[in-house]
Image (tube, one colour):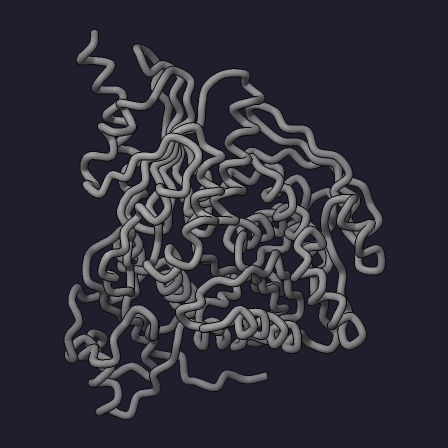
Amino acid sequence: MTNTYDLSRVHLIGIGGAGMSGVARILLSRGAVVTGSDVKESRPILALRSMGAKIAIGHKPENLRLSDELPTVVVTSFAAIPKDNPELVAAAENNIPVIRRSDLLGELMVGSTQVLIAGTHGKTSTTSMAVVAMQAAGMDPSFAIGGQLNKAGTNAHQGNGECFVAEADESDASLLRYSPDIAVVTNIEPDHLDFFKTPEAYFQVFSDFADRVSDSGCLIVCLDDDHAAELGQRKKDNITVVGYGTAEAAAKYPDLADTIVEEVKVGDNATTARLTVCGKEVVITLHIPGMHMVLNAAAALTAGVKAGGELQKLASGVSEFTGVRRRFEFHGAVETGQFAGVEVYDDYAHHPTEVEAVLTAAREKVDARGSGRVVVAFQPHLYSRTMEFATEFAKALSLADHVVVLDIFGAREEPVEGIDSRIITQHMTKPALFEPNFSRVPAAIADIAQPQDMVITMGAGSVTMLADEILLQLRNENQSVD
């Protein structure tokens, strides 16, 4: 296969974003001239500039000439960048092809063994585990992920190996741009209905994705998720399909079972699991809690083996995995005083199933150490998602002992009159406070917190900025008491 577009000079609109900065990093590693723009300075932009990218702050037509030559292609995110963006208008006036990030990523993957991780939940963690596992196995894959690997400190890399590992995002059906050799589907649960309109349309995009797996390739599905397992059942006559999951799920789908989680032990600081992967037994140690993370690890190991990696080396990589930014990310603990032992974490969970998985893991971790409660500051993401799943959010959040619910983070959506986060709190069975004042949240958490508690900031929006603020508030209140 050859590339469809000339990638010698590429201009990226919104270059500082998690996805855009990753593909920009790979382009620079390949010797392309990279320019771009964004609304503000950021660490990714500083890093890209150090690699040679020319980046402007603010969107202007003249940004297309940052390298003194017009780009051969312009890359945009259709969801985040409006059509009247002046750089898009200038690209059209100069007959420069405009493509999506997914189109560019598909171009960058040409010639590699393509390993794509799809699913409603767990894409970033699973992709990251697969990358770290393959690195430990000496495979040096190229990769592009939606989060920053804590260990590697980056979200993308141009490797020397044959594999290219990436997330396949379904939110706007862009996963259909790829032609995977190895495709993982972690789970399928209706989401992004603002785009898909119906659950049926959402399910269909995963079916279409499976149809894009190469004839010699492999579809890997989670057997603990009935929708993913059923997808595998439907496709097994046309392509190679293998499944991973718990022993109970493997018994339910014996013809697909290839990787089985045999035994899991949860401790205060780590979770150990014994798995049979493609017929061979291995033990892993995970430092990120939760059964969902054990299943993500099983998916990563299966993909690694199918890509030619040695199981024991892959397993050692997974055991060294220290997480991804905003996935049960530890921000710090209060050492002394009235809040002694309080730990503060931050997590990206923004769908009821994700919230339930994270809080179940948090509960297991707290129970393992024998003290403390789970306290959550949750920020709903999108009005459409909040209205669709209000009762499900309430049920999931009720796994915590105390919850402070922030107002809805609208992101790309306009506010809906008469709708706020109280449509969640009114259904909750545990103590819940609606706090619409963002800056008041750290003090509200301080009013609730007790020694040994686990505090989690949770959501896909600006709530992440509160983790350190809460930690600082708790430490300062200690000093004021002293």
